[in-house]
Image (tube, rainbow, N blue to C red):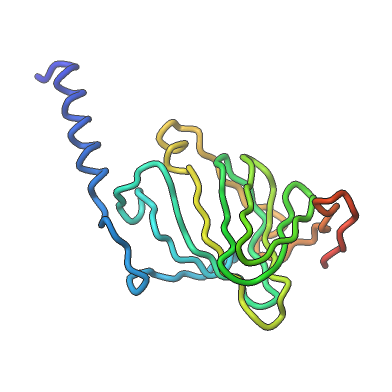
Length: 171
């Protein structure tokens, strides 16, 4: 029977092996796009699903169709969203924030949020990174879709704009 210390050594070896389970480079041609009520998404790094050299972060690209939006949701993880192309806005805890190509959106933990494409002719693409795997490893991660928004069509208003002015209602 292995000692506790030997078991820890075995766990360390397994962790090191898992940390080298993915490729050091992910090619754009190898991304797999999936569609859900959150839009069209390609995961770049997700250690539990894809295997990855990065064990504590998730990274993905999302596309919002012209005039489209993703589903309203929240998660017990931080998220940074870099706008690759397009323009639109996000509603975070009932406050509207307008954004465009090159902007970065920081979504706090457990904040209800939803992203909208303001352009009726061109899609929006953004790159998002979260620390979901780190929180999962500690047993802390939570993710929740708005039960009133199962199809990505929220009846929630857009609240106040990030500068304190009332935003428009979306129906």
